[in-house]
Each structure stands twice: as structure tokens, then as C-alpha cells.
Amino acid sequence: MTLKHSLSAHDVVADAPVIPVIVLRETAHAVPLAQALVAGGIRMLEVTLRTPVALDCIAAIAREVPQAVVGAGTVRTPADVTSAAAAGARFAVSPGYCGTLGAACREAGLPLLPGVATASEIMQAAHDGHEVLKFFPAVPAGGAALLKAWHGPFGDIRFCPTGGISAENVGQFLALPNVACVGGSWLVPDDAVRAGDWRRITELAREASALAR
Ligand SMILES: O=C(O)C(=O)C[C@H](O)[C@H](O)COP(=O)(O)O
Image (cartoon, rainbow, N blue to C red):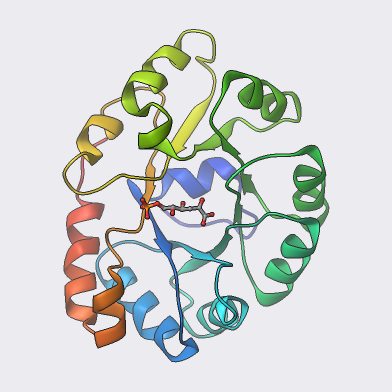
């Protein structure tokens, strides 16, 4: 798929079956990790704003890995949106949703995957124009059974379930008609990142990008 200059939330979830949820503790890891994921066929990358170096990592990937599309995860406030956009993030993912966050993303021109876990949160996000939502934390909150139940009343909404998804259970999520893709940290194991084992990460990305949906 050729990516347009301006992305939509639909583009973010359509690119690959899995969006890797990335936690980086060293800026030097950002570029080789992004290159390893791209080599395995995964280029939509969510770097969580959970560590002090996260913004520097986003900036490094945006600058040095043009084949990747880097987004910011754990976006919780309008200030997070502003700093993520300034660092070069092309999309945002939040664990939950409020209208202020949606407005800040619109203003910054960043597509948002807002986190939801209840019917009321889906209705709030949909009311504000969001049709592609992150379902978080997917497994603890009800997993595939909850997604099936939502498909009736919210048949027009597409989800990116995230939280507790692994190579073992990913298939049951990708098989659902209202799942566009999933998010997960399993293809970026902490020990592999610390050891600089980029080959292992490319292999995990290759397996993830080959999953059927
Ligand atoms: O930081 C965020 O914004 C989050 O929402 C949390 C992440 O999406 C999950 O921690 C990923 O879940 P695992 O794949 O089970 O590790």
C-alpha cells in the first residue's frame, strides 16, 4: 500500500495485521528496532510515551527510517498530543478517551485510535467522529466474546484490540469481522531489545505480518 501524506485512522489499522506496542528505554535502540520491524513487513509502529526517551525515539525513527510510519502510544493529554506531533508522530493511540483528547488530535492533524472498554465509551468516541477504536485492555476486559457482543449494536465500528494479545491467541481476534488489526508488545520482547537481537524481532514481525485477517 502506498501511504498518502495525510493518514486516516483507517489507514493506520489497514496496513498490517499487528501494530507493535513499543516501550523504548534507550534512544539508540529506536532506529535499529524500527528497521528490524520494517524488514519483517511491519511499518506502522506505536512508540509508547511511557519512558523519558520516547519522544526522542519517535523523532529518530521519523527522521531516519522513512519506510516506517511512527505513531505515539499512551497519549493521555493534549500536551502529549502536541509533543508527539512536534517529534514527528503521524498517529496517536490512547488507552482511554475523552473529548478534549479527540479535539487536540484533530487540531494537530493526528489520526487517533481512542481506547475504549465499554459501550458508553464507544458511543462517546463515535459521537465525536471516531470509527476505528482501540479496545483496551482487550483480554482482561472481555476479549473476543465482548467484541462479538459489540458487533450487533456497533456494526459500523472497527476495533484494534490490544492488551493481553500474543502469538497464541491473536488468531481468534483477527478472525472477527469487527477487528481491523490488533496491537501487541509480543513482537518486541524487552530482552531482545536490550540484547540488540534485531534478527529475532524481524522474525517475529515476519510471522505477525503473515497472519490472516
Ligand atoms: O501504553 C498504552 O497506551 C497502552 O494502552 C498499553 C498497551 O497497549 C498494552 O500494554 C499492550 O499490551 P500487551 O501487548 O499485553 O503488552
